[in-house]
Length: 285
Image (cartoon, rainbow, N blue to C red; front, side, top):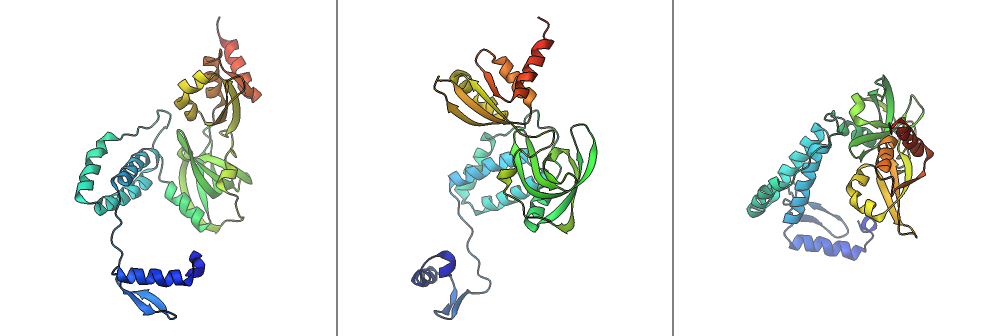
């Protein structure tokens, strides 16, 4: 125990004695070993009102932004948390329930199928999953995947995985997965961290976009910018702001730039500039 927790043996002996004095039924002797009396359970954890409100907020988010199965599991956990609260704190949590609301984006589409628990279990067990996937052109294919992780980028969830069909890392929208099952085969390789794969995608890939805009525009449209994939901002020498986006839709970003054309310019990529030119050419001026 001393080696595992990087403390001295004296600390372990002192902690064992402290637990015993606190009423925890510990049996054993120094130099031989210790054990808890069979059947003993620690008392329920106690939460502060602030911690309980944080859990309540998370429950609202999970109900709206994850699948039904995951939401049900979290709700069961919340029932246990409520059971651990004192009566006065339970009332406080009940009274606060209607003061927090989370609404889905209009672009979020239909509710997610129950995928998350299967995906996360396959990652932990290093098992290959098989899915039926419908791409942007409504073509459906069967894919064998080695899941690496799931990410949320408003308004959708994505699965990052090694695709056996394409033999490369890809990102798949969870709302486009129709069926999923674990086929029992183990992962064929050791996968890099999830963070290093963000941006590996098919036609729905993340593309880095850099814009220069005014401080006023950046501040006024702050919320909308984050929805479009804003990841970083820095102030320039001319008191303008450089914004870096990881965008799924270049056209949406191009139209936003066009709406603020008097204050915003595109640094890169040229694809965004070309989209803006095409939009302008279609204008009947």
